[in-house]
Length: 89
Image 1 (cartoon, rainbow, N blue to C red):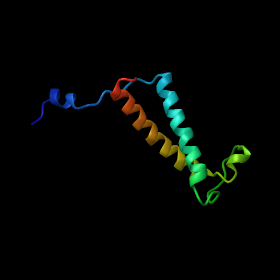
Image 2: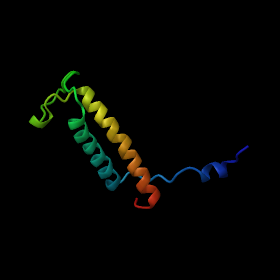
Image 3: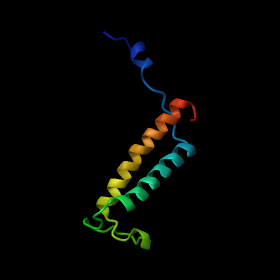
């Protein structure tokens, strides 16, 4: 049976939410949206977003936004944890 000291030894260090951490998450989300803009082959199948978008994002609907934002958050979480483990944060 494990005691609490050995369980705490395997918990990774996570950094607090700072402007640097936020900028990494925002950058990863923007990167994922750009990847999705050029990688999604059938755009506009889902309902359109209720806000006006720049001409570059024509046909970018709710499904595309949710998919790219999900990918961006996965990338961002991985980047933040990796940078936190390396001591950058």
